[in-house]
Length: 558
Image (tube, rainbow, N blue to C red):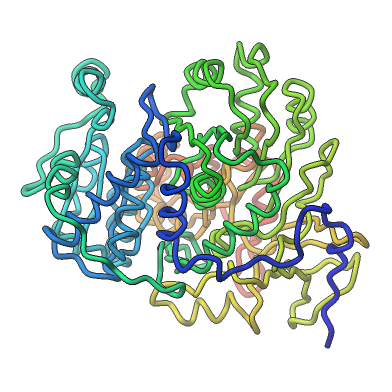
């Protein structure tokens, strides 16, 4: 059966139908080419400190050397990286990949419970953690397979005397570094110094080696590691690069990276793609500090920015943003969650640059669709399938549907993950006959543009992060006084969706405050409920399945 690709006739003239997935053997090969080509160009900047491609090459090589020579880690071992956007992040990522390790990107805001699960599930041998979050690690370290802990402070790569000042202020003035005790922990700068004393052994990498375990939730509520190979990420990097290509000036692009690098969106679209271009990533450590973020933007003649709807909306509503010089800005790329029309239209009015929406999943490295960059305005579509990528809509039985029909959006292409780490059954449910089932219901038009119309699964999307009801429910159910609990997503102006909890009490004295405190102790911030409602019972089908749609309605106090 021939598979129609109506989108190819709609492609921008400069974009090829296929990309070369074999152009590089590994992400390390991409790094080496970039460092050789753009050696004296800036690669990353953060808090006023910039490192060149030459420095990135040297620092990441030193990090790799320490992992292999001193820690005796081996190809395929897993290393967790628990950092916000700091200069240490690219050094650690590329150093780990050069050593042949698999990087386990770890959200710094994880609670001890969440962190313990991920480290155990991944079988992590080592971890790089910011001092600010090391207290969380210390709570569970002995219950994990982690043997080596590398700690770092915010300012460690900022140079003298700025490093001392920033670290002193963080610990003693702002008091954002809790005390912790981790015996045998090694300091990041000591690692780099020791690694510089001897060359790293060469590690042969092949395209099917696992580069990253990117953790994502699932229908069971248990976080699963998507195995993203070097081939997966190179393919996605090549796709995005081809799409952006005609707009790019090699060695000159300035990308604002406010989304965390531990998120697959920023990892691929900012870090990998713009390294290939010889661009500079401006790392924003705390984008929630909107006034500080705007101040940074006002000092930087940036050419590109990625974000989620909440970030763009936050910037638009921050004093001073409209006064920034946007004359260099030519690419604004939104994903991770639906871009709202009102936000996109206002962004275009203020910046003069169309906000281009794309779509994808952690399991697709992530980009599957992108809108043409020459769109004059917001389209409402998630775009056209990327080069070398097929999309279709399927019915419940896996039959491919036609134009205009609504079904589950499915993805096929070289960027689709190898599978879930040590979960073959889950992999088999998600990748069926070569198609990655997204759980999003959608359709496509005669030009090949795809549109999301609903979500098949109960997953909640908060500011671009997946939140799975079962995980929330499992946590809340452990609280004394809870008889039954259900979590659903409800619309939210700021985050797109927010978590709403509906509880049937066993103890009539159970309060909203007690539930919130329990959730704060056990769930990352974006997973915590914004609305907590008590009812006498939960609506259910005749076989006992909770009717979540009814719970999304207006509150019905008990």
